[in-house]
Length: 402
Image (cartoon, rainbow, N blue to C red; front, side, top):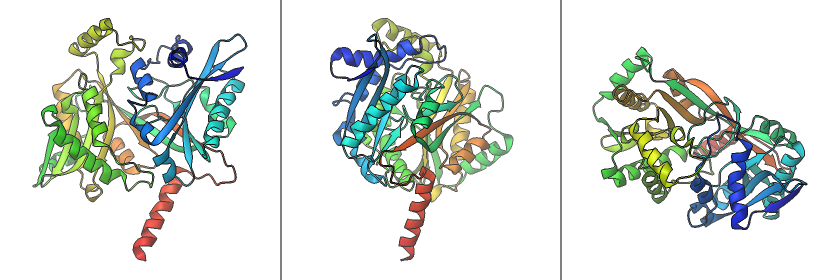
């Protein structure tokens, strides 16, 4: 077996197309759009390259057949915020062969080590964590758009190589085709909360996109900055670009904001599941597939949704605004009966408040992904994300006292 770095246009196409062969007999797998995969490794399209670098490799067997692929990358901002310099690996795909898998891990590790990294997280994305993040270990059912799906045997490769579970990610599923979408008690509380003086609720509108993007960025940055030191503020230009790219399938009434005295305090973003449309496209957005896309959208082929991201300003995290937003969504679901299922993904094991909310609305845990960490410098201690959060919390408390 030999490893070859991706450099030519042919290599890039082979890297992109290898999973199409690997999963060709898997009825659940959904082929990502070719343009999405290519864009992640395009320096003019992926803003992460401003503060980072990436490399890709293909693995060939003795017959010169591709049997695996992997990527490694460094985001200098994220790396510097960790306890030790930490890089990432992802886009890992391989046949059921332990030696082949280990060769790919070795390649990524050695590339990162040469660049001063002392730990390696994977499988993760070279960019935001709302897509291509984590290894699926439970719930091998249809993947929502952006959610990773992989071979079941990958887990043993990671664990036997020496990766350790850094944190768990949960996806909750909720059937919304029933008459009563949410529990009665939850609905009564939500109704009461939604009528409090000074609180208002609005759904996203493209005609006021700049305002809503600004509101979301303010809430997101206030919310997630308290979680961990490696928090990266949300780039409003990146968010605008994402919203514009998704204009063809985004439903404005699935994105809600809460305000208190006109101050933005909470948001909840749900996208229709694009995977239901692109599953048969084999990655291609040809003219014919674009016409199919329009027809499928018009005939409401997208019956599933994925909750992509949410945030509540820390000052309002015990105010119940999340319940009021779900009440607004309930009203949308009752009007748009073609939506049948909601996937709430992903929420980390370090976020018990959001887990409690999902369980309160009657959602059931359906999938589990792991984000692993491998200590390249094995003399350094390994600690989980939750342990790091607790450590940071204690540090902040001691600083306040002093």
